[in-house]
Length: 188
Image (cartoon, rainbow, N blue to C red; front, side):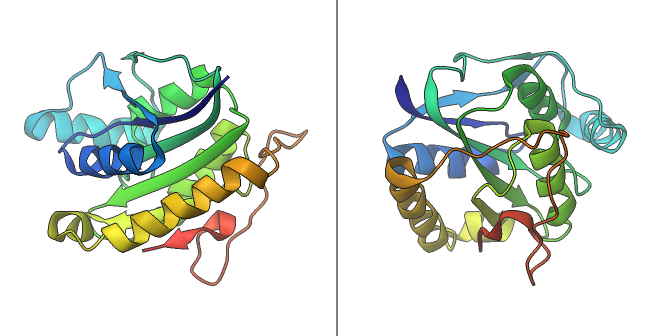
């Protein structure tokens, strides 16, 4: 069994920066989710919002099957407070990995609670470690201390954490803390 896979989707390149830095910090394999539909330009932006709000997942391409990995770290932008369609498809196709960690990158930093609830519900993994970053933090480099702390937590978790357990009813519990985000994760 392989150790860590960092899988990501990035429309603008911001999440790409985070995923690559995290894969390097964790010594992980890296896989980019590539949708079969285009989200480029103004029409693609509108299509992306529509897919996120309607919870539509387009066909995707990926390099790695996540099944052989002990841990999957999913890096994703936040679209209209929700999972982007390509990420939704990935989770629906991948099933629940033994350990799942979530990283969200949003333009404004708001509306991430619904994103993480969607992530937990679709993956079936409750209480996963999470990291939230804003686009501004990434573009200015201010995300590095938070990312390094998250990577350190992830490395510790690889050796001694129990796998995230899907609930029998398929619903993730509401584990929102005072910051409104589930999972008790690190918030940047």
